Length: 162
Ligand SMILES: [Zn+2]
Image (cartoon, rainbow, N blue to C red; front, side, top):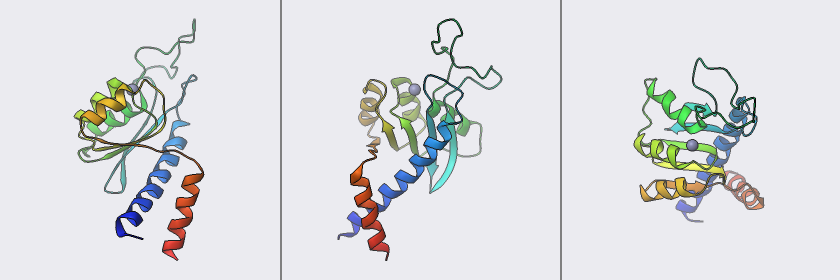
């Protein structure tokens, strides 16, 4: 097997692990309609995380009581993760973003401006215009499908490491 192929399989394994962590993180969301988690990884370190929710200091309720609709000031998971970096000493320049759902166009704009170079998402959610925008900005976009194929890849990695 070629070296690049081995590297690809290992990257896939790593992506799967971070995505699993993003899924766990999504469980922190108090939103009822949908829970989304995001992680920002740079140089194999998690530099930020986020889940969908209201801004700091607001009530921990995402939906209006009267009709169950999401409040307009709820931030998406990736927006929370990116703005958390803005408050920190870290920089998202050159980082990878893991999100459990594909980004909307508003978050795609933030991702581009934050200097993120790679986006890995799991579930197709919003209209694909966010993903299309990322691709136009030459960001490496990966849809991570959890299927049997992945199990095959994992077994290959195990065999290679033996
Ligand atoms: Zn969004």
